[in-house]
Image 1 (cartoon, one colour):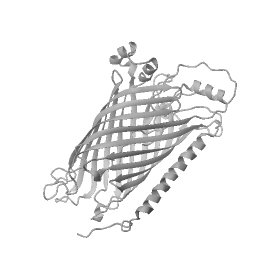
Image 2 (tube, one colour):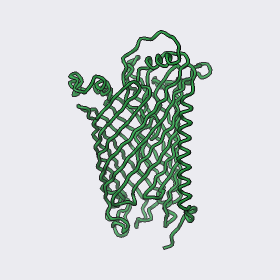
Image 3 (cartoon, rainbow, N blue to C red):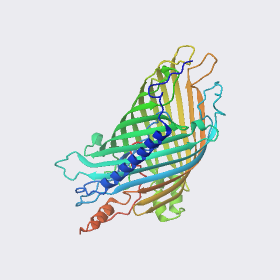
Length: 484
């Protein structure tokens, strides 16, 4: 068999050249971070309102296109204040864990183990880290900007390092960077609380073993509608339901060598979707948690307030995917239904479950199928976990969280592809069991907005009458990037 090598793969740069390019990338990221801090230190015009930025959280390290997990946290309106220095929002986190993967190489049912691999299952050891910087700029002049309230912009980055002791070919390193901008408008369609318009750019590179496997550039515009409640004057800690509509365009490039041009996966990956996020009840209002809060079984009053702001919440969504590649094997149109639920439990525990059902219709028959039928896949994905909060300290503007999470990630894929030897190449089951420790530090807008404005005014030497302060209420953790 003649090995087909794609353009640009015949001449591999020497190791010295590759190391030089890596150094240039590190220097470029340092320049981006320094520039972000310089922008954050600039003064802004009169602050009129302040809300938290749109955020699509829940990083995924899968090789396929991950579903978007979206969340927007808003703060209530605040009265005017003279020229203020806008706060810089900083967030960073790291997690370390150990997992067991029952099907690391995604081996199909009835398919023999390739000679290059010792086994299909393996243990995993990994570390993940991320950071984000965000800045809120208010539009003070309603005559010049009649439809805009605030603009939030920011940058972020993340990495994931995963090692396998037996299947080292699947050691995975992911490097990702993001930049986003988000506008809060005065528009309130459907009798809602507001409309946010945002966009984010992402670049990600995934390496398998020691070589680059896939890299991509993605742009995601997002519309978020805040939906109001019956209470016309919601409390400071109130959460608003929201409807999110988004479109994503990604250009991917795979670096693996192929033996058939039909297996080329380079191409355009597009998706459009909607998601509804709803908040049902605060933790302190749940019947089985009332006794816990009344007796103050938690360590301190401050922690009692913090855990009391957990919500029984969930989300449902739909996503349409259109993927067109350079070959024919992986061109498809897919429909995905996503859902999730987060349940606070007594004694600092929480239960969460997320799921996704994907129906994939491929444009042509598979080269591995003997019958010539068009390929059709049905994929089920579930993620179930229990989280215990080891620590949640709030001091001024800072929040430090330490959590322990144990869970399982399940994937079941059924496909109609079958080889002449009855090998179901794309039909597989996978289960990943693991436990990990998560540490997160957040510095941003977590005091009441009146305390925030007063503190900023006094820091600039402006004498004003102190407004009546509300009790400081900590907020649910906010991820400041749009897409992880």
